[in-house]
Amino acid sequence: MGAWLGMWYAIGATVIWALNVMKLKQQEQLILWIFLVFWLYYAWRVTMSFLWNLRGQEYIKIDQDAFYLKKALRHFGKTTPYYFENIKNFKFEIPKQGSFQDIWENSPWINGGERFEFDYFHQKIRFGRKLTEKEARLLFQLISKKIKA
Image (cartoon, rainbow, N blue to C red):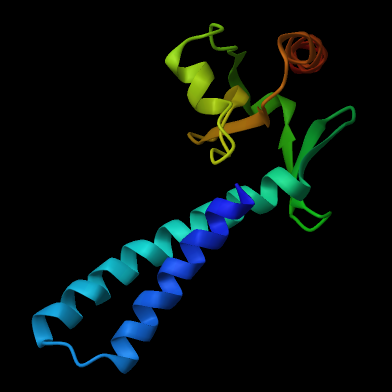
């Protein structure tokens, strides 16, 4: 994935060079600028995916009243409390092995793969990236007990 990302940056540098050095017609410049907008969007997405795969972690802390979720990149991230009495429809889902969803979530350029989902004040909260089935079941039992208590 690092090599792919490096080639993506090389393509962007080449297009920027072409815009600044080559004599292009107005229509050609417009096409390259439009391409650069899409290029920049995907450069950001893939860079963040790459960094998440290298150093990203989810931290979960559970106490009597809430559980705290922090999605961190090298320990930098915001911790958000979710109070048990406000959590609704807590569930987890493991995609069937070999299914399209399983293959898609296991690809290196995807940050997804969240196994847990719940409603919190009309907002869907997802976490538990790329957990195994055993890990997901244990965490589900632990949090479910706290929600019902």
